[in-house]
Amino acid sequence: MKHDTYDESLLILVAMRMAAPQGFTPEIFVKDLKLAMEFVERRVINRSEVVEQIFLALLLGEHVLVESRTGVGKTLLADQVFSMFEGARTFKVQASKEQQPDTYFGGLDIEELKKGRIIHNTEGSLIESEFGFIDEIFDANDYTLRALLTTLNERALVRGIQQMPAAIHTVIAATNYLRISEITEALLDRFLFKALISPDKDPFVQYQIAEQYLKASGNIIQPEKKISYSWLKYASGLIKGETEDQAVTLSSEMVYFINLVIRHYEVQRNRMMQERPHEERSRQKDFYISPRTQAKALDLVRGLAFLKGRMSVDRTDVSRLHYLLCTSGIPSEKALFQKSFETLNHLYGASGGFDQLSQMLMLEEILRRFKSDPSLLKKPIAELDGFQIKRSLLAWAKETFGATNADIEQKRRLTETFLHQIQPVTEDLKQLKAHLEREIKSIFSTNSEPFAG
Image (cartoon, one colour):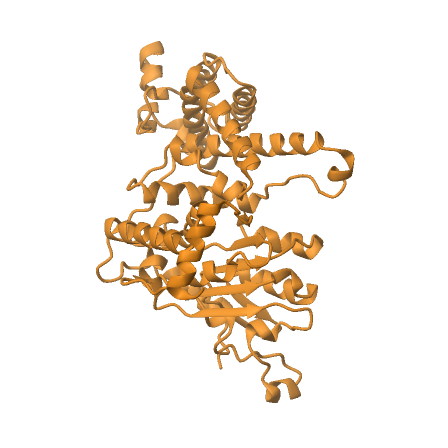
């Protein structure tokens, strides 16, 4: 039984940056991961997109919710995916309304309970398992689901005085139906990746499924080679900057563009819902992308770049955010996302919007430096060099004014003139320019007096 203090354990984990496990290289790991995906795709017929989505969730250490009618192989899919890794413990349970949190966290210590303390014996529970499969998750009662929220999101058991980190990497949950309530809406947000599997009645697909059944009678097939869980854990940390190796990078303009695409898609999804019949609209809430999901989108694009053998994100990675923002298996959602991406990508690419975005975000970084360290306003402008863009403020200042050593007033004039010469080509860029204008006014009005003379 473990009575670890969660805060102390977390501090130890934060202080330690993961070192690469023996034999790990990004190239070998990506090759092995793709082979594992292909193996599962051959075993679970006609589910390639869902399989890829699940492996992306594994790569990022996120959870997956799979919805389908009964008998389409959700359990087989989860079991086959988890069987591709070694060195990881797997917790499996079928949810029911009678269950209590101890089903997931381990039985209560009777002696501690006599003292009025809730302490779970976590051995063999979800808390001490790297992988989890919860079948019919919405059959669980709301009290149990609420108890799972912290465990799924924070990777921790927090129950009264018992607070300890959880080993959980990825949970796959399956359901035959969605139950919408305040609690389940929060639960759904923990499952960032969602898939809908519909039965496929195509005769050839049915033939392939029958062939696979005859090979293993509906059981998993063990692969000849498995991936070490320590490799998966390290790759996940590498993507998110938690390792000793260099993380996959994102430029400022790419982060800004990702958020524009997400917002555009959210607006379009809600517009599409409003166009549906009133009876259908009344059964659904507005489509909402939470700040949590927006932040995790940055992890996903880094993961997609990593799988392509790159250590920096480009726009092709953004085009595949549908794995996170859409429910896999619903073509209309994916098509709408692709339309949103292509609309913005063309608008910014054809009009020079990406260049304008880069210039304004470079200026925003300079203003942020001025704001956090006003002493920079007294230093030569040459010390602000080092921005890796085509036309930095320094280069523009030298070209326009011949300025290399600007005082505070000159710096104000330089930033204002630099921003003024940008004529935004989109409404979003106009809003960004207006924000920067306010920042310039605020920074230089605040700091004009202390440095006067």
